[in-house]
Length: 190
Length: 190
DNA sequence: TGTCAAACATACGCTAGCGTATGGAGTAGG
DNA sequence: CCTACTCCATACGCTAGCGTATGTTTGACA
Image 1 (cartoon, each protein chain N blue to C red):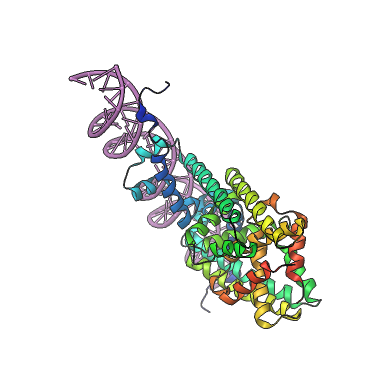
Image 2: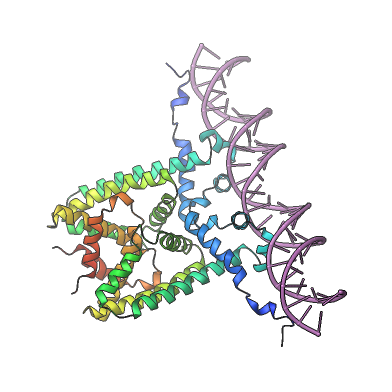
């Protein structure tokens, strides 16, 4: 009724999605400062005329990127922790997702966004939303392992802190054995 | 003999030191991208004519900053872990240094440099040097707590991973109690 | 088939920041 | 005193990237 042409309703977010995708790729490689309109346009082989039709400015792209990431992570953790299987196996599977060599891109995005969140309120809000859901879900898994509610929450914090912190250390300093030992200690039942 | 004037030898690193100091301050606040010559000059109330006398370019400042940080951290960990006192007390003291509210600046610098190290070889080398020494020293402390050499090393990795990783999580998600519980678990003897 | 709006292209002005070139103040030594 | 060197100021050119203004194409729809 409001729109005269159906084409206007066909896929309003599908074209801007390629910009968000390219932005996430740049974010993974070079941090937020690498998310720049003109370089992205070159990478996509289109011009920034397209960009400024879909987004008001660069900040809008970053916000859309944060929203996309936030929603995706929340949906993912709900799916990953909500299935069947023993809780310790599910935790181990979650830990595998942030091993250094698997899911490099996801890890890089994660770290870039958290770095940004230290000085950007909207990024901090996205991180808050994701962490809230993750700690809730993983806390429940630790609870299923036998920890009290408070200790399960502390274990969840320890769990995610380790995963992200480990990727900040020198890669060669973290041996496979050290990592396995650490994970085993984290997932040990009370 | 080589120099005709003694003034040339008076303090060759003392003037460039203020640039490094200002650069570290900017790094702590806004990451490497905030380490820019002209803004730093304004903050120091001098002109960039001074800068380009002391440094060949912006990269040289970043390298000097990395060297300064690296040397400082290595000297610090040797002093902090080499004194007297029970090993668990010394570990706890080390953990306090990276509590969120104490040593904010040091933590911010740490995270910014590690973020840079993901895409910068020289930053990665600085991180490698610091981590090598820290893990060695802290590994010895865990060894003194009764862990085997391999497990002590894994505990050291876990220790530092937690400290840095915790500061990446949403601040409100990490309660004081969760932190205390986690630290206690990390420092528990075998 | 002509119209209209979506989607992109083109061209422009503007600013921040890098690096250079050159000038000038201070100072120590001869 | 005057020379030479250190240290900083001033002024300039240059590029990358942001945002705007204005074409140009394409496809749906009456």
